[in-house]
Length: 582
Image (cartoon, rainbow, N blue to C red; front, side):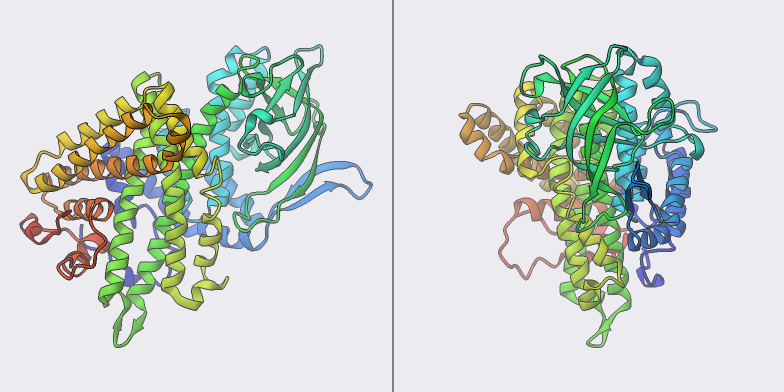
């Protein structure tokens, strides 16, 4: 492809987010046997998101949802009022099939493209609004839980009906999903939850308690963890219930929306406090197995969080590159200055790593949900790693995109203001960094996740069998061995010391896995006659494992800026000019 000309745009909208993101497309292609269909479908989606949904998202974020707990007579109505632009985005997204396509074959296709495809589409959606991407991912996650466990339930017919509505393509038939986990006394310590469920005598339960942080608060298909009478303390005593917004007769369920949170960002998704007062609930799956069943949705939401981080970072980079191409300072465009070139190139390389790890986690999740046991163990390692690092990187990326624009980026007239506010939630949603690092330790201990993680890294490095990559491959092989040693060392350490090093281990695993994945893609691209990804892989390895000392010989951004930042094809003969990881 010819290089991207960011100066042709004046801002990051009214453009196709899929075709303007070669990183996302190239990494996606490596995973898809159905690439032609996916590329065509997401080209259509990227156009819709960039042309219509982006404008609606800006308008919706200026008019946040409003809570109406009571009507004028004082009767509970539990209604959330949305701006029409938000409702239009709902219709456009669900009717396009972003959720439905994960479970059912769309028109002119024999099979469903799957969860990983849906997550890829959600990454494109997150270019505009990760607040709205939240209910979309929650709807898909709730559908996944009902698909997995609904048939084993007393009210299987009711749960099947909700699954059909969560995955409906017609907007009038569609409902959204949510999960209400957090209670104020426990937070991430879900085992301390106090919500109770009492049998009603007809197979349903009456669910009572306070839920403290309920995103997509008015969802019709909400999953809730609660404790039945006599159940043990801790997570082993929790059961999972579907608690609808309305009862079968159309009346409101017995709950009250106490307030909506006044949040820093993600204003398009209403997040509130809910008091359940004997609300009708339907047991999902086996009793006292709720937390394990809910981890199905939790793992999906964590990958969706990473996909959201990819989308918001992609948008931040797009805005930064457009501004740098159009803004003149000291006699030339910003992106002609050496330091700016270095910054843009470095962030493009970091973005490549984010995409590589996120899509690997998405496909491991998809394979695990199809019954692949090896993929399950790999997924258990990759999901916390991907969610942790991409969430933090997205905050740094959106902050830097604001800095590039200068004072204008700090005011609400420019989208960088919202991107940064929204990105701040990504390290928090679905578990903060410490919780995720500890989850990685659990995966290593309970699922023996180190073995498939190292095996996949080896697979990547073995596939990068090209003399032009040999030096970088050797560096990553050494780091792979270092990761193996660290994994075994922590496995033999006492609990306190292992936990102390958990985050450092997650960082190291992310860097080694991302580096190996980038090298595998580089080998594919070299075979096609393009050395751009080889330079990207070398730059990532140098950044992750090399020295931080200033080095005037490190002229990466000056020599290969067009290739890295603008995606210009690079003649493999020029690889001799690329930096090494020394």
